[in-house]
Image (cartoon, rainbow over all chains, first blue to last red; front, side):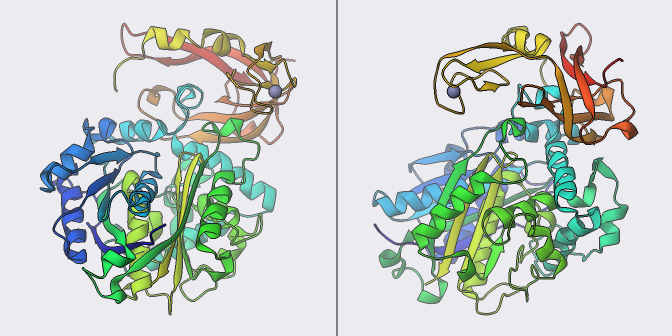
Length: 385
Length: 135
Ligand SMILES: [Zn+2]
């Protein structure tokens, strides 16, 4: 099969973009990516988005964004996998290029969340859970993660302060990212003093509701030479995705992301690498406990030892397992359906050596994007060409 | 607030939500909740209804302080994962309990309670909640 490479990236800052519409954000990121890649037309567009119908009463994003970006009569669709929509859209774009059907593909992830009232946004996010058997009982997405957080602390003997270290690391790194929503370092005390949203989960254990869009341009290694120098090429070396029960209560294990393990194993096999070969990890830290569970399920830490990596300082830029190098969901922000594409853009920066918070000599990076309460997960391996 | 839930949508799950009836696989005997069309253990499609006792223990819990719209009236309220006597785990609100009393392994029993109201003239949804057993 053909080797897929990313040749251009574009994005908007993550934030509360009250003056911009969903289409404005998406088109800006998309056109930036096309400019970065030096392409003026693409064969198709994949849009990662979770809940535009609920948040801004707009579906059919393929047509909307391709139309407004002036891409002509190309095929364009929305890809939805809850908060993993962005990661899934990138993978669909890669598949289109690998198959030989399309040569130059654009992927944009976008979400406009701040047009909704906060309690409505909370409900729309819970649509990614099981509407009949979870949302029905008044559970929020945060509450589902709080159930896991309480169990994780009990099972492995961690404290709320221990988990807060993931938020501290994310904010430390996000402070260097001009596109991040929060650019201020925080301390464990900041997290501990923030109010409970769903005990024991506090406001600073959670990623913020935000607006944003990010985009990448994917083509084949052969075709890439027409547009950019080798230094700008990043190979999509491996990818995998898998689902688990949508309903947390139906899970066989509450503290292991089975879907992430399966997805990661597929990605490692395709890339021909092991977890020890990876130089940095952009994992889905929508909640601090999810950062710990993610590290464990993709094999970077043993079960119950994910939070230990944070305590030992190994998740920092100069540690053995740097994570959230540009702030992660927690500090960069989490415009849900766009997040997987932001992760991809940030990994590309690292591998091109262009990151404002550079992991020295990074050659291989991993992005892991979670939809639902661990119910729909993508893992993608990116490698310097 | 969004549109009121349709009556038809709710009535599809009348038995499950009022009486805690789930599924039992005729092939391997696995019991599950809610009832599924395919057995999650063996893949059999021969599933019969199964009445749970309603007795269980708290596996984990949280207090919802920022609820989804439509549930503001009840906030803050406790939600738990409850492991039923017969094995499956269900998610539900806890009721008739002081949040300070909730603990791992606490015994609870199922009761039918109001879960949500849809504004004036809207329908009222009932369903299972769990409480410490009345001794
Ligand atoms: Zn069976």
